Amino acid sequence: MSKNTSFLPYQRIIFALDVPTIGEAKKYINLLKKNVGVFKVGMELFVKEGPKVIQLIANETDAKIFLDLKFHDIPETIIRAHRAASALGVDFITVHCYEGSNLLRTAFKSANSKTRVLAITVLTSLSKDGIIDAGLRRELQDPLKLALYRAEIAKKSGCAGVVCSGKEVKAINEKFGNNFTTVVPGVRPLWCNITNDDQSRTITPFDAIAGGADYLVVGRPIRDAKDPREAANKIGDEIEKALNNSN
Image 1 (cartoon, helix red, strand yellow):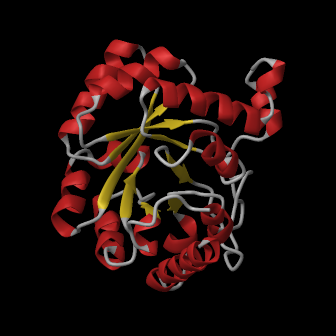
Image 2 (cartoon, rainbow, N blue to C red; image 1 turned 60 degrees about the vertical axis):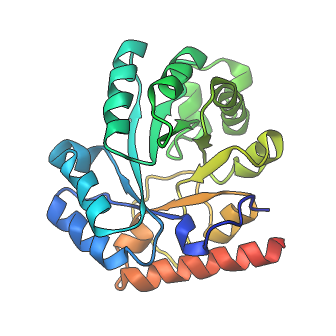
């Protein structure tokens, strides 16, 4: 069951602006600003265009802004990076869990009151074989166990929530409750056909929301659709059905 009923179905959609230029970003921002609730700026776009893309979203829309740079460095560098990101006025920033609670506490303390820190648990591109290859100890080589372990560290460190796959979202919600935000990437509607997909742990919008996800990150199913607005609306309809089904 989804936890938060205070916002509309479309506001749960985070559209990933995975494009290389501000011109392409502006096209999708103007096209989808009434159909999604959050725009996500990742590494490619931010490295190419910098803070001006954040300002563009703020000027053109009422949407929230998710700056997804997945910070992972020594604490002093994280402090400075998070202060800079918070000063841009973004709503969400991300940090990896790999370095444990010290880094996550640093990230939490260095963000301002508006900017919410989300911890990356296990990337949706990682399979169990990939986790084993990364050298993690045996008891954490299962993606679910690893995600729960890292979510617990994030919660204790003060993070607002986590980014996790749809395969783990229900267990995380059951363990950590209503005041812990869950963001689910790797969302693949049944009607979407993506070739050469690099995501190994995917989920439908309905199942992610039914499992308790607060937000869904959606990129290619919307961006590559013949009609991106229609695709976003179809995902919104699926979210609404899941919410109604859980009530």
